[in-house]
Length: 159
Image (tube, rainbow, N blue to C red):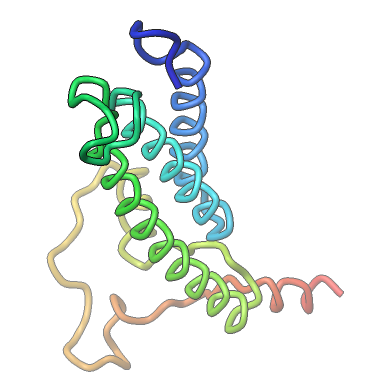
């Protein structure tokens, strides 16, 4: 990991930067598959960053080496915990992406009605009203999505 006691090499620092930058870029996409890949890359970049924070040396076992020559065990424990958390988040996002693909035929994250309203009002330079509809779900415009964008529907219409 390090050359002598100088610290982490430039290659590892660049690897952390590339992994984190690529992960954040993929997290900003609309596809759940790309979001999932972004979480994985971001998790790996942060794990490598945490691991670079510790010092290298002998195994941190009592009696095997002098205390000053042992590696720091805390970053290793933190990385192990972060790997488990990243794995759990990956499994959850994979289940959400599969469910989205199964129900709608698309893994794209759709805008909700409030997002569409904010974009429309921002284009007209207006302020949103507090409430748009009634109390019932049938006549409440905030609760009804007028145009579901599904890949299957688009494919059927184009055919």
